[in-house]
Length: 226
Length: 232
Image (cartoon, rainbow over all chains, first blue to last red; front, side, top):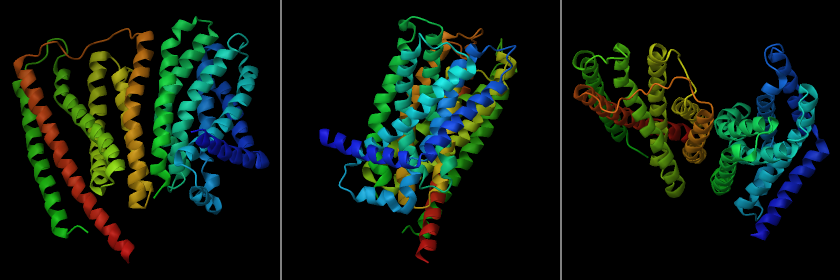
């Protein structure tokens, strides 16, 4: 098992290195997230809805859209020059390969989220100071689940005719449970509610992560192997 | 390769079952309009339930069978399982379209709104979206083996998504309760209503079987055609 973990880390490192050298995808995803935040600001009537009431939904819709853009690129880079075939020929268990791609995607989406969060505080004037550790925690919990499903779907989507359209159509229904949970927890955190009011949601998010990370790791071989 | 005669036989059988079911559907209409009493509180609007509930029933059978056959496909790699899953998903989408249109027609006079984010409504809506995505994926992958594997993965993941959507929507609603919750089903139905509902459920199940058989035959024909074009 540690061997599989090591291989997964190697693959993740390869992806992250490739990304850091070009930085175009990361930069575009960050700019995209910032633009979504700006658009949101003009989509609300400030005299009717205060920024804090809308904050959790704005944050999570932005995260979801940015993740979608980020995930689209996960296997697109592998498709070019037949890189995926090379990766599949390497003596790597498929579970480890999936793990590596998942870790790289998590790093990618996590970076976009890490940049979006301060921008969100800046644009919407939300006081996060007390809730910050909680928000980071719930972001991680929700992101692991949908990025895991997104990783396997993006591996499929690049092999289809309408890759850019196929991923959101497939992935959005799967984003619903983590998104509902994350919005609920975030709004309670911002309101300073006690932990036991969020426990049900946190359990649901954790269960989602366990079920879908396991299932996607197992199902990945069916996606890449002939 | 499947023979032309076998494809025709299956398609014809599907057509025959569907026609019998459509005849049954006419009987259901007659029963619902003439035989069942008018419900005291809901009036004539309640009669849509003889279509809505059985359609929901068939849709759920359809989607459950997609999930099960998808799992079996990844295990056995039998193309027949894939063809069945595809047929069932398509018919399921049709039935859920019936369910999702008859529901609001009833809800407007009874609930006072076309749509509400109730747990069951939201769940079925997302099932509908999920399977539209499933069919879109099938349409955009050319290689039959690849298409079968991809859609089987989506089918299995979709089956597991259902309890999560249900739980999260349920939690969402119990924390923000609805002002009016009108239970559509009474604890005990008058025998005329119950009988009509049972007849209608049987008819819709038969219609499901007929349409899936027909679609399965069509799938066989499509596969044969693709094989022929690929061969030259």
